[in-house]
Amino acid sequence: MHFSPLIDQLMDSLRCLPGVGPKTAQRMALHLLERDRVGAERLAQAMLKAVELVGHCEKCRNLSESPICRLCESSHRDESLLCVVEMPADVLAIEQTGSYRGHYFVLMGHLSPIEGIGPEQLGIAQLLSRVRNSAVEEIIIATNPTVEGEATAHYIVEQMRALPVKVSRIAHGVPLGGELEYVDGGTLVHALSGRRSLR
Image (tube, rainbow, N blue to C red; front, top):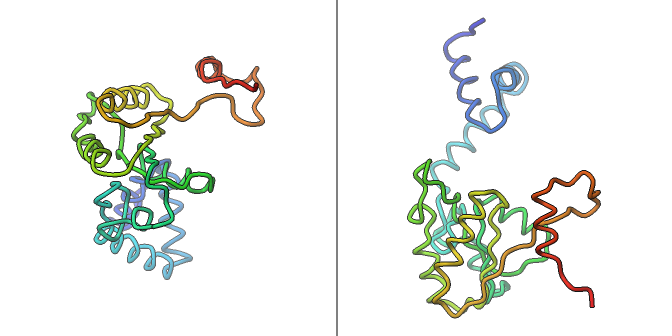
């Protein structure tokens, strides 16, 4: 069944969101139109404003409304640490732990020749320039533990060889509260190879 062209267009537009299929898009569209028109207007205005005003931080490439984001501007961050992540969501995840006080560099993806994503798209030249021209002493590579994430991490390590900085990789392994019998083989391999001494 088809609704009016505008409703179909709304449902089709909502499908651009990750995890939203035809049924979910239909439920969302009908909810907004039937029960929450004020919320729909607020959502539309917020989306238009964000699309118009949110860009990328000139230093770390994270999403930001200003040329330099609040994390890069903060004088309370440790200038000697630079954590390299794939996406803005990774910055949020690390920040929510409350355990990291350094700076970030957001690649906005990972190396993927099939998708046409190379070092230029990831801002590797900008990353190298930042390391050369700042007080960074350690680069923490926090790309995802996927084939593409590992390839990206390896490429960054190779590019950093000539620079006088320590390069580390976040540990991957068995999650806290996890049981070994349910952990996949690849995760166990990472856990065993990344083991640390207890004494």
